[in-house]
Image (cartoon, rainbow, N blue to C red):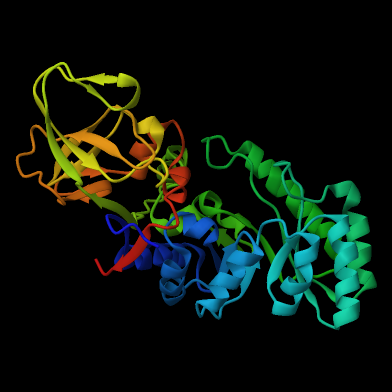
Length: 381
């Protein structure tokens, strides 16, 4: 059930623009796999996926079997790639449904061999290679074991070889990323020398897609950039240094309504913990939004919202379901007036990057943490 007092607006025009930008960067011959995991980084997976496909996305990347099923059942007929860990007892359903999925554990291969033998189906696997991120991945010393498994069972199909960069977003020095790329290419060469020929080679996330065409191979996994956000300021700086002037347009706006207007005398405390005290007679607006909804508690006394194009600063602590803002200088503030928590109003804006700075986190987390129960509304503009 949705909270009718708060909602997210998704700009169809900006989403089409961003996917078009990515398609323009990589060309028509590359597979564009758009990551829609974690509810499309908070944007609403089933809302945005059909638009992304319309704009040029070929594949979709999700984190789990449940996300893959949800995406398939909403009518998406493009290939779906599961990028997170799949429990051993879910592998058979993944195989039977024909989803592509990442593999890197020996136990997974043992179970897959049993499944393909008993069902006669094939497993569409993408082997993750460890090159320096030290999360998912097969180290070079173990690669021969996995190669032998593929060669020993035709039901185990090596669809792709993949890796993931550890330090390509948060720096303008990309030497570590290029070292990872070199390791990746060597491991790919080893697999090919052993007689394996994957259909897809992939390692490019959004930052790599923006900065390094040599990471494209024939398959690109773009995430945050689909949604009009830069992976980091360093990525933007690096892009400008390379003479690549790219415009991404934020897709998401977050709205709520005023639930109460109240006059508060000078010297009054506001909210839990009495962390804010008015210095003059004030007019406060109570908003039906809080940290349960994804509006971070770190924004307490530390952010602002927009009402009729004017800034209304947050006063007191953000509570579980309520937040107070100062509307003393906004005479048009009234009960159920629309409020922008994230987005643009007139000449003012509050971006995911600003909220991330106030919350001491990253823009990824700001949008991804917006509660799934909040309605995502597609708007044309």
